Image (cartoon, rainbow, N blue to C red; front, side):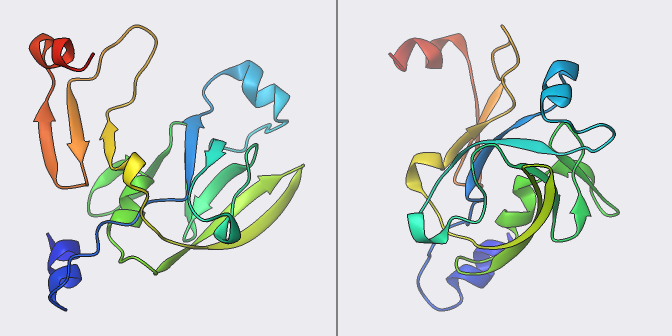
Length: 158
């Protein structure tokens, strides 16, 4: 709510910023070995989104921290006030044009990158993590609206 009120304070709603990459967790021991992570934790960047000129992470990077907050291998951070929460939360608390600092592992080296946050409409819809044959129970639209998913809704998505 605070993010929305701050956004609307100028009379125009710009939207909710998003991290400029799509990631997957690294809980598979074979993937950890392939990435030579040893005891490191983080998430694997599967693709990047947004303006080509603003890319701050690359496909194949491992994001180990956002704004200095370590990420576990499930893509969660620990916040004193909220507990374990997705790293996406950090972007949704900011405004479009704000930035986050990423600590990345790239080709075995630590890289620090500053990312300007933008919004990509094709990534406004998010769901709970999809694991194997499990269907998510809810979907989030633009960071604000939660819709309960049902068999009836899935039958209309075709």
